[in-house]
Length: 450
Image (tube, rainbow, N blue to C red; front, top):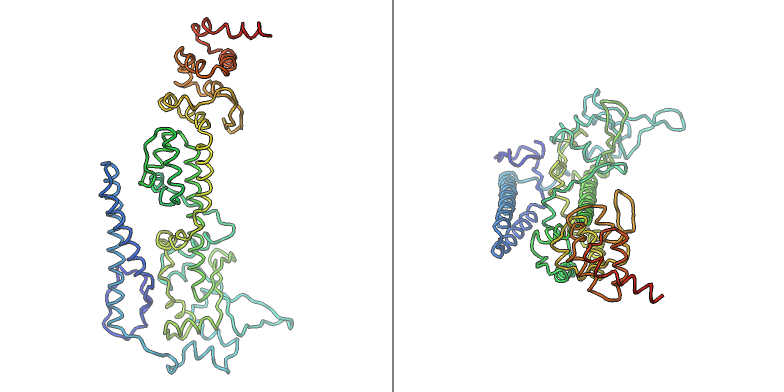
């Protein structure tokens, strides 16, 4: 019997005449991880006041409960199988098998062809010639060039699985992890307590009420502050972290196989190169109490439980839970927060871009009008003051800039800056007529003083 690959379709076997079922070792860890996540979500649900938030949390809990039910079912089936199918303690004294064949002092390197077991039309042995000009077999290794579909059929895994793993792990891979926008609600789970507190501090500066430790609060704040670029950068950093985790997980899964798989584009039909190291075969057979006589049977009975398309969800967390997995994200977020906390005025070009006139009016006292901001417009870096930026976007904030009440407010805000701000208004040709009458003395006074 092949090792069971699909637990959902597994029927308990009541005799022990088959080869041993390979237990998936980390099911108990998965169950504890899911149980902990569900408990945490239920605790947070009790504190969630928003109806939308409660709905989304309930959906998340439901998904995790379904996953927990599935994993628990798999573990129960494993336990039932092992109860009814005790494995043999040793294979040392069995009849001839690959262990005895490959360990025999009489084994000659060329003898391996008798123990491959594959249809001759489905594989090739790459020819390597020695100094004598004739083919030389390797006493400890075998290389087969095969078709990926044939191997996937022997391994009882989904077609396309092996090429997919090789694509992800290739140094030339163009694999990209795409994060759904609604996953941005979980930004807080990737950040340290210090960064969470900095979000709260930035909120206080702009009188924005936020508990950044709560799900969905950070991305709402960033959107309200019109920090779309920063939100996009955060999403990109999370995607990169996931890409690295998935690539690491795929590499680990392939590395744990008892033979090496490489791409081999020799023809349309033969696209894989399998490299078998005989000591690894012997060690694996002993560890898993495997009793096979051919390379074909060995391939069939290897544990491929983790070699599936679901590994991206199941295995990446082993690497994402590492301390430095989101280091790049945290560095990006910390730089952004420090910038706006130390210099709140740098938020105002973004408020113009996003046309958030409500927050602009509310925190007008923090805005600076007399120097140029470094911004990016139409893929070019520009230096513009707030009036020029508003003229570029031509939105409601520009209309507000042209009003008497706005100009009166900023001209009266600081007597030392009045003349500079008035000149800026004149330069941009947005001076209100009433303001011009009331403040023309500024220019006249300046000329008189000269």
